Image (tube, rainbow, N blue to C red; front, side, top):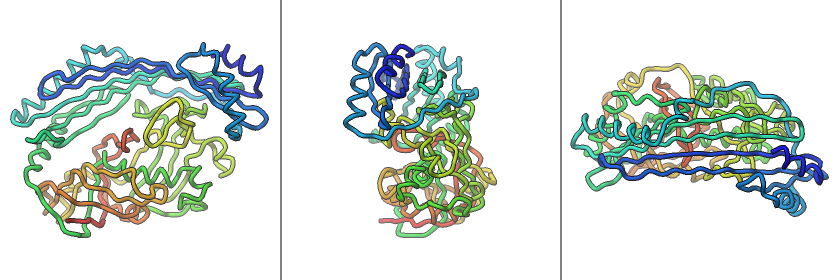
Length: 438
């Protein structure tokens, strides 16, 4: 890396070398049989140069690629992107890597998948299902001309359990993702089976306003809108409704939201972001009051805020080395005055529990609009789940919906936003939302 940077500095004012080594292995078991084992090992390299106030970048799979500097210069001269200042602040240690996960062999992952499959089958021999176990190990290094020279290791183990309907379609699902080995409890398996059986009782709804619970994993669809609002780039461009609203109470006082890049063994924990800013714990909303935006170095200067460590090589649909560092979540965490999940359900006379949606990427995300097809939801009557709702939608705007937070559960789930994990949330009860029925 040093050799490449030195070569770059002979023709540029400043430079940065970013290297990411990735090793992933996944095991799929379906209907009690091994469906497949996949593995990938790759190196990704990115070079960014600054010269005369402009910046250019190039990517490769090797530090020895002789064309990296020339291609970065060509990009600088043709794309006319403004140069950014490279950071030099040293990061503090974070717990992003588990040697236990790192040492899991393919045989270990396969045994884990079959053990989980057997546990499901023992509880419900009549319900077909599947298990996917995936291990990801990364080593990320960044060296720049400002003196930053750091490396950290990252581990992740993701487990996905699902049931299948009689026609072979996805029934219910449960997902885990952590830097450590997740704990799959008997309670989780029982809940998965219960909701699968409720799927045989189909309920069609009319248009109705009612209390709605978003399960922890589905909160990702709403948090994508929260993220769009606090994105410093969107604030500066005027595509977020939150300009000049720091200090205002925009959500219910019952909810606090933060982004914690330093969370021990979180799904997106990082020592530093992809620009070199150390991972941080940033409170976004404290008891409903907007406290901070998520910003990179340049945005922070314009918004009078320290960079938050959220400049990541990512887009809404990818996490590739070619992606320009943009503002995204690390570990979004939803907190509040927690109540037991069962008590929240018991307190609802008539409402809806939503456990899966489609269409999270549609609508004006940055302004907070959503229109989601409920692919898995359950009617609640007198505190009990009655059956699975089909053919319904939920629509609205988060800046209205989040004013009506009524309760926050205790059982955290990993949040998914389209293809990627965003952090962790318990179930959240909203006092009222509009359901669009048949």
